[in-house]
Image (cartoon, rainbow over all chains, first blue to last red):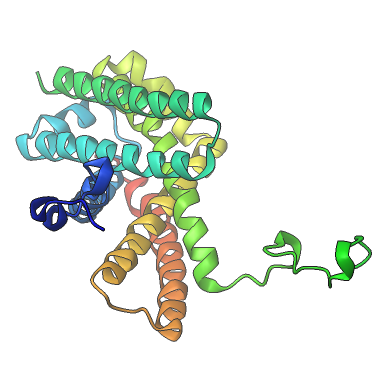
Length: 124
Length: 140
């Protein structure tokens, strides 16, 4: 016998009350990362061997600063979900699992803060 | 493996998956490579952070970064990240096609896997050839 209400059944979330957010967010960020990664590839190529002042000039262009910011944020969201699925698959010991999931989040927030502060310093 | 004693006179049960005698298929290799390149690129975020921080701290801080990047080991690591990025990008598009329901036939999944590997190598080598021949000659 099913004890679900009709609303719970159509929501399809079960006992966990959540389900497909990570799946969807991974797909959405991956679609966004297609043009952003291609842009980053061209940007990196344009700046091969460039002097520091040329890197600053490049990122001080509003389009480049904005795209770099979007690239970093989208990349971090995508990376956290990807690494979390790797941890979910391979780390079984509960304490180690919680620790690695926390380190994963911490790494992403730290990288995000460092990259965005550096970008803001370059732009300002 | 055959001389493992088995109780109740039963035949030995199949021992699978067995890594050394596993027959690797294109789809298996491309799948685990997607994950390995993903983890590698995750760690590569450190280099993007290093690049931006070095650039934000002036020419004195940027010089060691440039020297490390131009060093043969630095170039090898950069090539690794370039290829990993190209592979993860192309194979990611292949995964998105699967999510939409395209390319699931074994034959299609095999040729798309081979195409992704070939394209990623061409893209990474192409970028490095371009960087060495065009860009290095006249830095902006």
